Length: 110
Image (cartoon, rainbow, N blue to C red; front, top):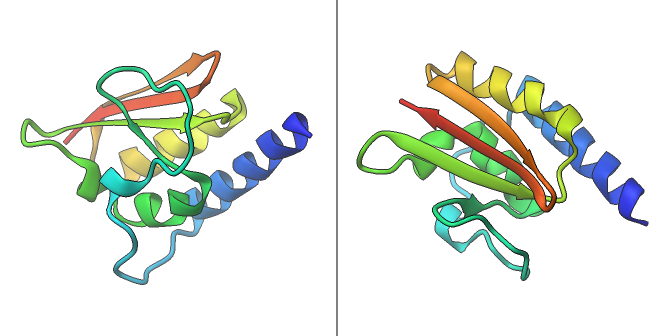
């Protein structure tokens, strides 16, 4: 079932990167970790249900220093270009995606 979960995450990310939801609101990013997964230190984990909200308004995850560090557990590497496209389109710079064994780590600066 793990390969199908990766495909499902890829589809969710690709669709929400190209056509983000425009509805405001949603759960705060800090409460996004609903499952136990190894998360790199300093990264905010993003649950699959919160992907549409975070891609619609990634500015909610920006720190006071203007940095954003998100972790997508179980996300395949194929989703990285879509995530980078979305962040660049919203004006983020220094966008980087790192593939880790546990998922995809995304960093950027506003």
